[in-house]
Length: 535
Ligand code: TRP
Ligand code: SF4
Image (cartoon, rainbow, N blue to C red):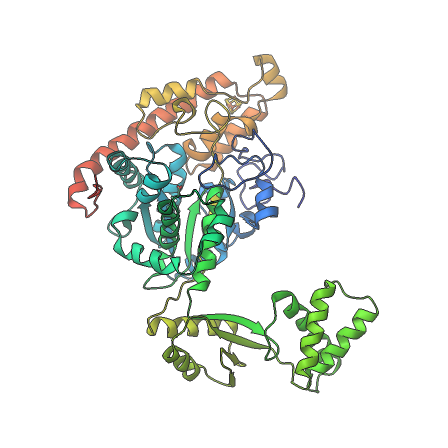
């Protein structure tokens, strides 16, 4: 991946800024500090180089799926949502009108601010696209990892929920809950905890002997949050979060597989391989089938073929992979090499295993711990295994998907932080205070008006431009583009630009707070409990 190829929206459809690579709408989220990326959910969550998230952590660029999303949200179109894991499954469900879900959680450590609005909007948009929507208050995490009192938590929780509702969350259709009072989540957490041990959490989160047990419990609770939408009815589920939460997403994806009754893999013979070995065998199988279309290809044939390739030095695989593959193929000898879909027994009960054998149509071969099927596609096998598991009291989780948004730059430059009031705009700020904060924000402007006219402003480095792109321009791409073009073209000067942004912010806050007040009235009729029984 080249430097330029990470332009978030650079070659996506309908970029609001044309197709020039440098015209990247989003900025680097306070690109100060060290340039190594640490994804730490309780750390300072600045990311100085989003590209590393792709290279080091295997997050995929959102650009790649953008075209598969029907009527994408502006945060997607503008590259604010820059990355994902497995979002294809969700996009497909949306296109095909299949069930899907969205869930995110909020640690109630302070007032909700315009950074949280991104996530609120993401949840709400997915709900409007037909998803089952969940918003949760991570009160256990706030209490254990951040030391907030239950009273503080209750107050903040109330404010988060009101803003989520005011922005358009439909509580009749969706679900709002607190971690601590959701019994099903707690029970699921307990079950998931059986599959995760201390060393693993230590490795992922840098926990050590001093880490308190409740903090660990809040992690396993988050795993349960993430899988909760699928408890009764497995479906693609997207978790919109900042990239600091990616370690949680990865662990949840792992646990989703580990607690299953069955796992589904592909294989060519009775023995088990790892993915690299499987790739080597797949390649041998393909070549040999091409060469001898009418003959049965046996394991020993593939071993011979691979030996030959090795002697010619014509292999890319590592020596160990090749060695182990050849050894296994030799041991299997005359066994025919045939592609098959394998269902592996992970945690299934005997009844469930028997039921699955019954349920598989067509040719199959049953072993102690797995069943090989020859007429099912991988997907069919997965669906069947899931169905049988659910019928027999097991879980049927699909690996949860995620989308990642950029962190907003603080208004004072640097990182937007809840603990620095001038750096962010709280959704509870007085509209005039919001106006003032925008007026005093740092810009990407030049030292003098002349220079600005000559060189243009640096919209890509400008927190005020970010406000337009992330929030103020709302769905209006033309307006966002206009601000950008005028800025970099030198037609727009910062004074006027900030005045316009400040007015829009003031209007937004007025409107938002009116809606909050309306919801406040209706809250009693809704079945949402804010007050912790512990406070
Ligand atoms: N850990 C998240 C945070 O720090 C909050 C959270 C709890 C969460 N459970 C979740 C986020 C489930 C997404 C999904 O903000
Ligand atoms: Fe930022 Fe506006 Fe100034 Fe451009 S003109 S640098 S967008 S404040």
